[in-house]
Image 1 (cartoon, helix red, strand yellow):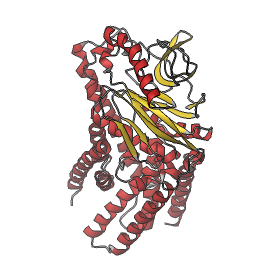
Image 2 (tube, helix red, strand yellow):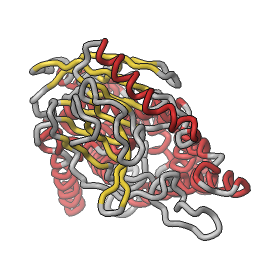
Image 3 (cartoon, one colour):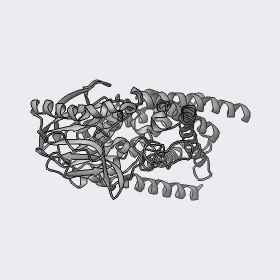
Image 4 (cartoon, rainbow, N blue to C red):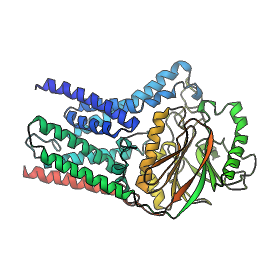
Length: 493
């Protein structure tokens, strides 16, 4: 086959793989992702094909960004709304394309490149190093301002046993394994096409798959708990575009009191409400009938912050607080743009980030808190569990986005629960409102887009998972060893 034909075939494989990856990332189809990764390895020799893979996958999996339109609720002119929403979506696609293209370019450098004569063991070593690099980059992206849905959640909810290895090696380690599985599948195709023996490749690959699934199952099957708490969850279902209307602001105090009374009747220990429920420094109409943890806003030193506020039983003002530290681009922190919007493209007028610590100590059990897409940062929540968090609480407002984002969000909650050996509560304005057990099993409590109060028993734990203790150190160590081994092999060639 000519180089030109190989190039166009790689472009086709890259685009096809991106389509499969986009479906896997948005719908949680592990087979889609597995074959997508095999096609990525098959097209890796042409970085442009890798760009196609990354761009198509990102555009398809992040298409919920288009639901930002219309942006008139942010103060954006109607004629600019759709172009801005499309530009944000396309920018994410370009960023994803560049990331995957750079990864392919790195894999084709003389340091990693393997000729057809190189043994399968040496190829595996290079693939292992490249997979580790991808996994660590995904971890770094979770600490950036972007909400990035990476490969680590694409095997959920179907394959919790494989993702169970995150209990030891975190999301980056899961990504490494996923890429190696795709590499193995690609190698089977290469061996078959070239008439090479398949038996050894099939047997060793199947053995590795059985082993990692067994280990993952073992890790998530023997969790221990110290106690339980009965928690009431309030899904408010207030459309963001209507949240600051006169009618909604008038209804809010009575709605809060009604939810507190329902929680009291359920014999709940406390009530939790979503991100952004309370107005800045709002007080309750009547003393809280039980502890109330709610998303809201507060002023500090003349600057506004989004936070989780704690109202103690019998109080009307919040006492404890933990601020949001990762602000949403466009909706919360972009500066004012003359002629476009007087609010800095933010319906709340611009926010200030809080401290990075995610541990909240209050009168109840210590909790690791993730506000909105802070849930993507497993490293920060791991630090909170090391400091004493006995459960994880994620509050969010995912309106006006569609159900596809809710699926990705609950997959992130599953990953965090497995990594940290903690039950995770998600309470969101329009959903998902669920309990995710430490094994990653999801108990959906309230249907999406419904106003309701529900209650559930949450398990508390003081156990420390391997990932919470070591975080990315095993991956970094493995990468250093792999790179050193590659260097040593090159000296012998």
